[in-house]
Amino acid sequence: MEMKVNSFSDLDFGSTGARSAFQWGGTIFALFLLLMNRMGQRSHMLTNLLVLFLLASFPTVLFKIVRGQFGCWVAFLAVALHLFFPDTFPVSRFILFVITPDWLADRFRDDIVPGILCLVITILVTLLEIRGVGGLENCECSCYCFSYWFGIACLVCITISYLAT
Image (tube, rainbow, N blue to C red; front, top):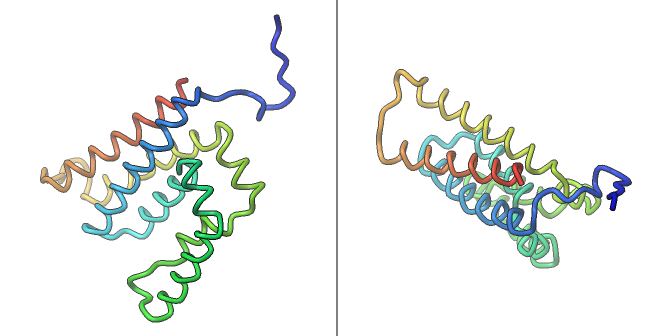
């Protein structure tokens, strides 16, 4: 029996278990790295990359909630708070989840594209962190540094395991 594939999007990339592990694990470790970034060097580039990672790997159940009426209200409140506290509430990153067109969000999340994009993002995050600590020669070993590298390693492993299935 021959399987006929009409388009690239008809291929099944990864089982539901691998996709679920990628979505939940990627989200947990990306949020962990966002918190670490907020406590440490506060790199805007790193935050933007991790938000793109979250957009690609956010669990489907939570993604539908955020893109629904609840997300619209949260985005509205975030914009209102941003008017009074612009340094505390970076609104543009959350609004990306809410205003992305449905056709782009669905296509972006249901193919092999999120896995490849997340792999590229983890490579960029790794390079930014190496540059941020002053290179491999000047790397100081601390609890913060170890935790950060652990989070990056978990992101890489989760993404590669998703792409391998």
